[in-house]
Structure formats: C-alpha cells, structure tokens
Length: 69
View 1: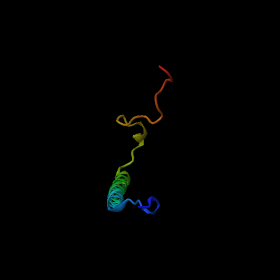
View 2 (view 1 turned 30 degrees about the vertical axis):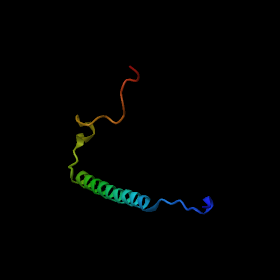
View 3 (view 1 turned 120 degrees about the vertical axis):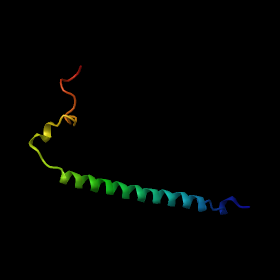
View 4 (view 1 turned 120 degrees about the horizontal axis):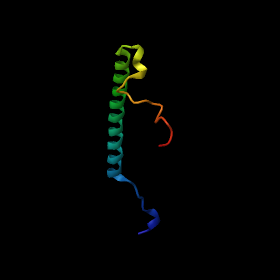
C-alpha cells in the first residue's frame, strides 16, 4: 500500500459534528436576537422620570469613588 495515495478526511463524524455546531449556533443567535429585541421594547415602554439617573437599585457606572483604599 502506498502511503501517499491515502486520503485522510473527517468523514461522516466530522460532518455531523460541524452540522450540529452550526445548528446550535443558529438557535443561540435566534434566542439572543429575540431577547435583545424584547429588552429594547421594554426599555421603550418604560416611563421616563427625572430621577432615573439616581436610581438607588442601579449601580453607578462611573466605578468606585475615592480612589485607592
């Protein structure tokens, strides 16, 4: 048997693994898109109040205050 004439391929197992990964990626992206769309819709429906910037339940996005401890 000549070693140069042997083709090494992924075969059916490689194809199935790649196909299943592609299907999983499709469903993950579809789910993420729906969640982002839902979040944007809820944000539009939320009434704006003047004190939205100082809401006590939301952490301050500017980081820790006072420098180093």
